[in-house]
Every structure is written in C-alpha cells, then in structure tokens.
Length: 494
Image (cartoon, rainbow, N blue to C red; front, side):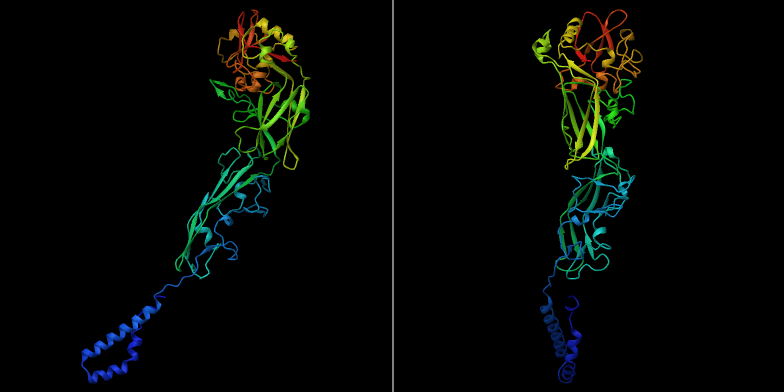
C-alpha cells in the first residue's frame, strides 16, 4: 500500500515534456518552473487522495486442526500421551473417576508425553503455537515468515501426590501415594502478526488435571490410629520398628492373607475408637459396615480428606453408660455384653461398578470397657469389672513398656512389672501391633467419644514384690505403682 502512495512525478513530467520545450521557446524561465511544480503537485495529490483509506481484513486465530476449526481457548494444548500411544485430552479425560494407569512397571512422569519439555515445568506459548506446530491461522495471509506470528502466555505443569506433596518429573510413582494429579495450565494470551488490520486476537487460558496410577494394584497402605506419641520424643523412640509403624501414616499393613489377619492392627478394641485406612491407587470407594454380633464397624470418609483415598473405621461394641460408671453394680442397670473373641473382620472397598478393589482384615482378640472419667480405688474398680463379667487388665494388656532405660520416675516404681513383648527399651510404650491397648491406640484421651481421661494412670491387677498395684499411664504407657489411692479404671475381656 505504501509503494502505491509514492508520488509519480517522473511519469507526470514525461507526459508534458513536449509542451515544456515549446514553452521554453516562448516564455520566460519563471513560467516554466511554475508549470512543472503545478503538474507535480497535482499528480501526487490525486494519487494520495485515492489510496489513503486502510484495508481491513481478519484477525489471526488459534486452530488445532489446520484451520478447520477456530478456537478461543487453549484446551488443544492440554493433552498427554502414554508410552503405549494412548492419548488423553480434556474431552476424553475421566481420570478423576478412573485413574489413568501407566503402561509399564517402573515408568516415571517423564515417560508421559506433553508439550511441556521434560527439563522444565513451564514453556512460553510462543514456542508452542508457532513453528513447527503452527497452531494458528490468518485468512489474509498475514503472519508468514520468521517471527511473523507472536503469542503471549505460558503453559505450565504441576504434579502432586494424593497428599498434595510436590513431585518431580523424573520421579517414579508408588501406589501408596497414588493417584497423582498431573495438571497442565495455560494462561490467557494474545496472538499478534506483524502486518494486517486487525493484527491481534485474545484467547482464554485453560487447565486440565489427569489422575495417574503406576502399574500396580490398589491396596490399603496404612491403618492410622491417633499418631500422638508415635515419634522420637524426650529421648525415647515411641515409634519402634520401622517395618511396623510410620510416624506420619500409622501402622503398616502386615498381611493381606485372611489366614494371618491377626498380624494387622488392631488386636484390641473399645467402643468409639477409630482408625483411618489409607488407600493407594483407588478413590471414592464404597464400604459396607460389618456386624459381627456384639462388635460392629462403621466406615465413612475421613473428615477433612479431599483426596477420596482415606476412610475412617469406627468400632462399636459393649460399653458402660455414665449411670453405670457411677454404680457399683452396673449389670443391674443394664447387662454389658461380652463378644465372642477372637473375631476376624474383613473390610471390602468397592468401586462404582460394585467390584471389590481393596480388602483389609484384622482380628480382635480383646475388648475393653471403660469406667469413664472418674477415679476409683482398687477394690471398687476390681469389683466393678467382676460385676460385668470382665477382669482388670494385666500390665501386658495395656503396654509394652519395660522397667529399664529412660523413665519418668525412678525404676524402683516399676520393678517386677512384665509388659507385652517385644518390649520397649524404656519405661514408655512403643507403637507395636499386639503391644497392649495404649501401645496400639496411642493417646486414647484424643478419641473424644471414647471417654478416657487425660494424662493419668489406670489400674492393673499385677503387683510388685511389696504388694503395690501397678498402674499404667494412659498417654505414654509408662509403668508406675501405688497403694491406697484412687485412679482411673477399665476392664478387659477375655
């Protein structure tokens, strides 16, 4: 357009050349110059006035199918592809319901193809939309050539595990941290061409999340009671064996074989105690509670869990009411039943099709009935347990603490006590399956509906060589002894 607007002075002069020569012979030089300037000005003015209006075309646009479809968002950039060639896009993605499974064992997130390179977590859209992908079009032919099209904005990648912990692209996923959420996010942006009117258009950002599992079967990874006093504290390792206890997750599953469910937590229970099942590789399962006569389980999503992979198992069974706590003959008010123990439980989680996806089994060998939050002397609690057909617990029923090592009180107070095996190295419990009631369940006061007292001792039937009764601290499991005092009580069956 600009070349057409230049003045055509040479052509104008040629057209009047003969007349100028004639004028030179007849008129003076002044008149000749006047005529030349007049003709030149007239020629340029006429041309300019006829070409000064701009020519409007069409704006550039995004397209992901060679121009057949024009789009105003970046969903077409948010695809992933697996090593076996399977492709997933925002329109085909249902992984929030059924996670995508990587094709091969040991694959990392770097084996998932996408537009974000493996050595970074973000890339400018200008490097994607231009060559060689050419995710753009312009009906006027503008934007051709090197740097002819420019796009603003960024495409970024985020990978987190089910606990919302950041994960590197090179990491190999594990089933107990699955499903992982792989999120591709594009910002708002603009397409610009160097020439043309208009020469730009805006597009909207988009985001898509894909849920990924490694090639492994879903499973129950942890059974988590209260974690308080489950780590290293005050020079004592409350956690114990790393093969049994994880200080952040709870008890590690010891067996998936029904014949050895007794190796799993819990082995002893009480009304309204609960634990959370941490599921790897499956989300939003449904569970049916189990009614095994006198003891039942209620299974619900864990409060506060947004991943859909944690489920709370609450035990329901024989218990004493507040009226019975205060009575010396509680069974005269209402009989407190006794469950047939040991009893095995198998919990089954099912997907939306009703298929069994995961199972968790445990075996209860003992049941505890708590006498509430009042203190009683030894004789009172002993006869109360007799009245309901239960018994006072032994030291080993409550703790695996030993009378050695680190202790809150002098070791003379716990001399002769025999706790559960394997024993803790100190006079505090360690979190072990079969290690006693407090060792398994932790700080029982923190189960709000179970009605245990905070930070105090419970009677046992065991005595030291001086005839004093051993008592067990309910929050750290240490062994002490006393006579002729009052403290809290619970009963155990069998």
